[in-house]
Image (cartoon, rainbow, N blue to C red):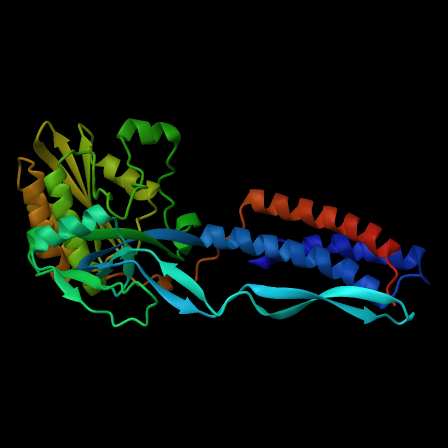
Length: 378
């Protein structure tokens, strides 16, 4: 990683040599160390940031709510945090009478901390997610099993208890969540994996390529290029069921009046997709299925082949039928790709990063020359 910028270290080295030559008897070893080390650390730190950004990617993860909770407002006594001060007189070292403020206990015997209402869910991954009051009420009605729990708090004047409701496992009543996570992905900026196609802006428009949906949590849509709320919600539920258990996230990408070449460009555009994805591309003419292409890092070839053949044989496109097929068949054979297999890939710092490092190390070197020359370090 740092091999691409090591030559830049010659800049502070030359500057240090010049300073030592001109101010031979004035530059101390501390000044010399600072003058060289500060620009080097700034340069390496900047390079590290660009490397991290170049080798990191974002994947979409899914879960479903198992319980929803409402905690009532409550309060409690805590130690007082408001000190009380008094003025006292004293004699200073010159024998003069002075006054000063000193702490004399606290203003109250205790403070009261107020805790407002809390609405949240616990999902099947063990995470707590905040929700609205409206959603809690809706889940209580949907799951129809709201219960009371005494929290047995050590309270002051208001004893807040809890109400909760539990998901009963009914697929139709499931509440799902989608969120993002950053992971190491050296493939996204590597030219050694996807070398056949280079996607230009004109290609994105011509083939109708899809960008990842940026909305998530409650509103992630896993179907691209086709409006079907029921099918989209169903696919989201399949993703939630298999998110933790199988580390699987399925997307359905629809292309209208395009050849299968569109799927190849989509694959290059997404750099093969994320490690947990099974992306199904379908080409339509009207509602007739013309082709099907799977984009995934999963190495179970039979899963990809069967999916392409079975969906291609459906002829007429029905989003809910396709989603049902994916939810029923893909998890059975899915095995997530381990991206540790790509550790051999060398990630280069982008050109903009190299320019930034050069500018920063040059400016910081000049700045340290000025600063260390004026410093008086004992």
